[in-house]
Image (cartoon, rainbow, N blue to C red):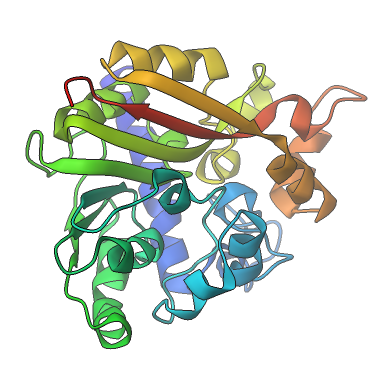
Amino acid sequence: MNDKEINTVRDNVREGYAEIARSGQWSGVSANKSEDESSGCCGGGGCCGPTTLSADQVALAVGYSETDLTVLPDGANMGLSCGNPTALASLNTGEVVVDLGSGGGFDCFIAGPRVGDAGRVIGVDMTAEMISKARSNLAGYQEQSGLSNVEFRLGEIEHLPVADSSADVVISNCVLNLSPDKPQVWNEIARVLKPGGRVAISDLALLKPLPKGVLEDIEALVGCVAGAELVDDVRAAVLGSGLTELSMTAKPQYIEAMTNWEDPLYKKIAASLPDGASMSDYVVSLDIVAITPGG
C-alpha cells in the first residue's frame, strides 16, 4: 500500500470503531439504520461481535469464563473478541502487559488482577473514543479489584507509545488484522518486549485469498475479515521481526460457530463466495504465541 491507501484504511477503521465505542457494542451500530443507510461497520459482526448474540455470549463462546466476565466494569465488554489471549499468555504476578487495540479495556481489566499490585497493564488504541471509554471504566475496575495497575494510551499499534524492552507480555484480541502494515506491528511487538518476553495473540487469518469483492468491502474490513492475512504471511511477519519459538494454533470452531449463529456479516460474505464454498474454507481463528530471544 502507498501512504494514501494506508491512511484511508486507518481512517475507515478508526471511524468504524469510534461508532462502536459510542453505541456500546457492534450490534448497536446498525440498530437505528436501514440496510440502505448502513455503511462502514454498520451491519454485521465477524470478530467484532454478531447482532444475534450478546457481548457476554460472544466472550463465553471464544473461551472466557463466567468469572472473567463478572469482575468487569459495565461497558468494558463490547463483543469484540475472537479468542482469549489473556489465558493464552498465562500471565504471572508482577508482569508488565501491553494490549494492542485495547478498546473499552476488556482484556486489560481481566489481565490486571492476574499481574497484581506489582504488575502493570498498558492498553493502546488509536481511537480516541475507545480510549475515553476505557478510561471511564477505570473507576469501576479499581472499585471491584482494589487495584490501580491499568492505564490506557492513545496511539497506533504500528508506532506503540511504549518504551523499548519494557514489556514482559504483549497481547491482542482480533486487532492485528485491521492494520495496513502488519510487519511493522510485529517489529513493534519485538521492540517493546524484554529479552525472553512473550506475545500471545488471538486473530483471524486466511487459509486462501478472499474474492476481490470481499476485500474491497469496508464493512468486512472493520469486521476483521477483509484485512486478515494468509497464515503463511502471518508466519513470515512474526519470524521476520526476530521473534522465535513460534506456535500457531488454528481454531476453526469459531468460524463455524459464527456461521451457525447466522451472523449478518458472515452471511453477506458467504454469499460472495464461489458456489459450494463456506467461510471456514477461507477464514480461521488463529492463536499465535512467540518469544523474544535472549531471556
